[in-house]
Length: 485
Image 1 (cartoon, helix red, strand yellow):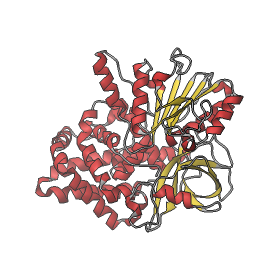
Image 2: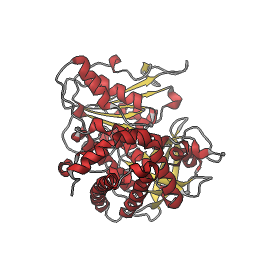
Image 3: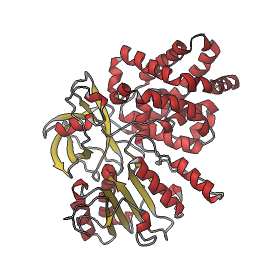
Image 4: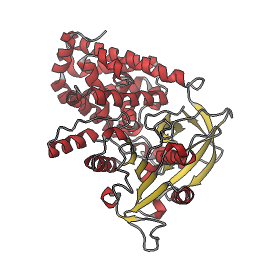
């Protein structure tokens, strides 16, 4: 059942209260819940709890929901991604009971007598309406995973340095059962023990090779920081450092592949442009490896990557070798700070950051074909710049798919709105389901409310939701985790 009209009005009326007291409510919520249910520390991002980033982000997101209240298409797309993230972390229905109990209790604790029975009842109804939708949608994904419904032990069978910062890990299941296939571009969750913590920590890493039945490969950037140092959990990158310190033969836990950023699954040959910066190339390597071995999938491919210099560029030789043997593949490497000894045409092709203005509209970006697909992955600023540049050149946003690794969500809606205002056109914004990457999902998990407020996976489900239920889901787009560190 949906919220009553009176409950909806009560929720909308409490927006100023959330603005004023939101950080306090979310801080109390996290503190009480994680103190009394320490097992949930294995789900939430410890760094963001310690620094206070997640309570602040969640409080701001709660207040910001109103601007998305009528943007149902965009919300439905983003929350589909959150359902994938929940499933990748094996969120269970009983955990919704815990989150709901402590969230509502925190509101009452902070607001006191101002949180009247009517207000508390309205928030309780909104919470559980969405919680049941989440549970149902997540159950559908769990059933698609067949027998793989919990963390599974894998062994690191090979470590291969790909650059100064990035190392590939080849992971094989301990039980030696054939691995299920995945969509190129998807990710797995990896769970490891972190020194100094009494619980496991999970992070998501894109699969960086085409599907194979015997192993999965992830390619991880080692962020700065020492996981054994005092207060390491408060610094970004301690999970990636734990991974880099593991040796061949070591075990870790892995989830079933998930994610809504992947190569379009059809047999229609169409041009494909793969745009990435830094470690953002990892899911695109998976897509590239798949495309070159299935020639019917793309008539032309352009792989474009930005890095500081050759030593920072992973898979450089691999990508060049593919271009030498596949005439439909073109490669352009941008180097923002190439060293004097680096060779033009080998180590880099363009100096500077990735700039689409330096590329030919037809020969490089295939803008003469309206069916061209664009896959983009990298830091938030890079993502927004690429999106803006493509849309300004006339690319339909429905042809653009994006994945973000950095903290924060891609501000694609803001960028599109700015362009719309500048052009004063009647441009209708259409948002692809993959515009908001899995980072938003991890944000939702890290925020705690994600267990209950986000996750419808199919647009028709939205038709029965109240305005508040839809608005709650918009919170996910404003949260800001670091998912691959």
